[in-house]
Image 1 (cartoon, rainbow, N blue to C red):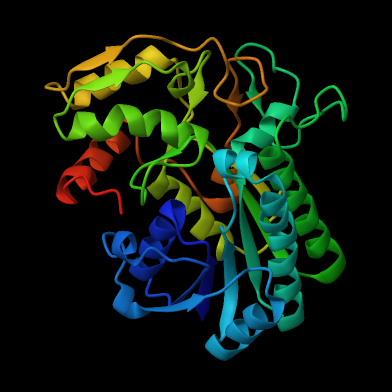
Image 2: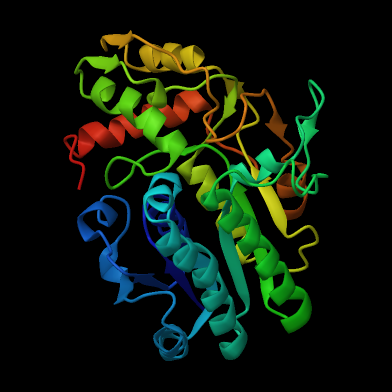
Length: 332
């Protein structure tokens, strides 16, 4: 059995590391793989790397058949900042690319496809009542609660295209709504959460002064997080699980933090760090949405996948800091 991972960046590297622990043969399918970064987390000598575009269905199909792939973990895609700056390219990669992967899986009879979705999809729901966690299957008003960014709508579309391929064409599909992921990355993260945390943690871990003077690097309200290793565990479980029912799963730590609470935890982990926060945003970390305090219900991931978060926010920050120091603060 061989697993193909598309778009092997931060989350993909941790997924690969987890699969190597299981002894799973791997194929990386990426338009521009960052080998130096990947070597910090993965044994590349045990990986087949194919440079390719996910929208090149003939090449993708040929790779699947040649390498004996029976599972695909689809992570290739633009994040918020990339898709904001290149909207049409992002539509092609995030929406058409997901369709291409699903079509290749249908044609080659791949056993399962797992899509990395986003917490941003949950922003389409009206704010839940205080203290009530938001289920994946929420109600929404299709106009007044519509997506506010192309990134969000691209992931929403990917979920539904995948569910149709599951129902109509027998492609065993699941989507994991990753929430506030953080940890080792090959450079400054392109996602909103990763960017906020990176500017706090990177210099703090290296004992350098941290100055936050841009409100875009902060947020209002409370925000949930999850360490990349816990993301990876949920994705791997979904890829190897039969008989899934809900097929779309929230993955979070189940704790939410205001920005200054995050700063306090970073100070606790790196007590010698000098952190100066000069401004705090009045806006949500999710572009276009009002700040709100909501929590995603992870019951389905726990019950159906057997998943549970192993890292607290503090533990994840500490391990990330150890990786930053081990790699000498290199941004690859």
